[in-house]
Amino acid sequence: MTVSSSVSSPIAKQSSVRVSAAQIKHVGRALQFRAPAKRSAAKKQRKSRVMFHYTKDELAPYFHVSQKEAARRLGVAVITLKRICKRGNFNWPYRTNKTKLAQQQVQAQEQHRQEAPRQAAAPTRESDKPIHNGRQRVEEQMRVAMRSLAMCAQQIESPAMSSAAVAFSRLPFLCQLENES
Image (cartoon, rainbow, N blue to C red):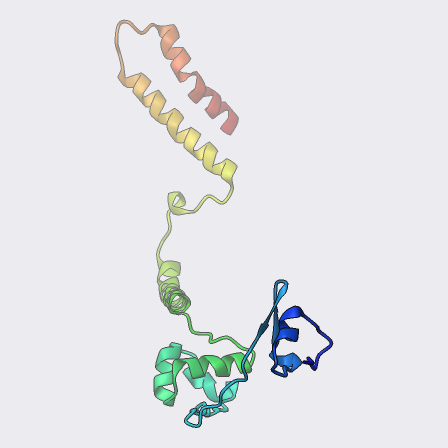
């Protein structure tokens, strides 16, 4: 008994069948023999795939809709459209969230453009002007707080409050007035 490969084993020596190297499979220390594969006459061939060749320029008119909708309009499957994108090395640009956000931004810009002339023509008061500096904002808030505190101190005319207490409560307001002038 001879084995056509250079492998010799006790199992192969006892067998009276001639074995090729392709039929021997090593499993751990033992050798396992594989029977030749049977070919069935009724084996079906794989269905050939129709290759669609769309360029990025041909697909561009459909970029504003989802892949599902574009595939329906083109008459192909969604997976086919995905394969075309992969073959062309580009991603489908449509995203529902991004599209909605972009539409909202365009609408906001349009509203701002329409309202800008009306706002420019409207009279403005000094108190309506925005304060650009953070320090100015804090100073303005301090001024308002001091005025309200001074008004409260004037309104409270209780006998328990001495003239020193009234002077002390008005001290921040007086200091603020000195700083302004």
